[in-house]
Image 1: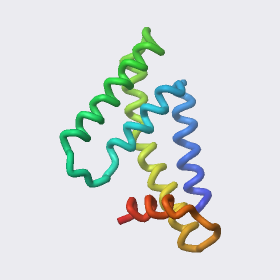
Image 2 (image 1 turned 30 degrees about the vertical axis):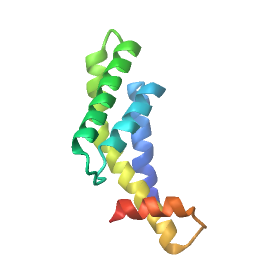
Image 3 (image 1 turned 60 degrees about the vertical axis):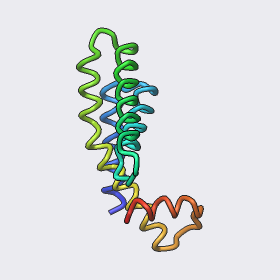
Length: 119
C-alpha cells in the first residue's frame, strides 16, 4: 500500500518535470489546490475571489516564463491538477495511518489539520 502511494506521488512529480514546470508555477498550483479544497468556508465569495486571483497569477506567471507557448503550457499544468489532488489524498491517508498506528510522535497542529481533512 505504501508503495502505491509513493508511486502516485512520484508520478505527479515526474509529470510536472516532463512539463518543465518552474518553481513559481508549482507554488501557484499548490496554492490553487489549497484554495480549491473541500474546506467549509462561510465566505464563498471571498474564496472565489482568492481562487480567481491565484488563477490570474498562474496565467501571468506562465505568460512571463513561457511567452511562446503560454496557452499550451497553462493547459498542461491545469490538466495535472487531478493527479495532484489524487496524490494529496494518498499523502493524507499515509499520515492518517502513521498517526493511527502511533509509529511516531506527531505535532498536535498537524494532527488537528489531518483530522479536519478526514471528516
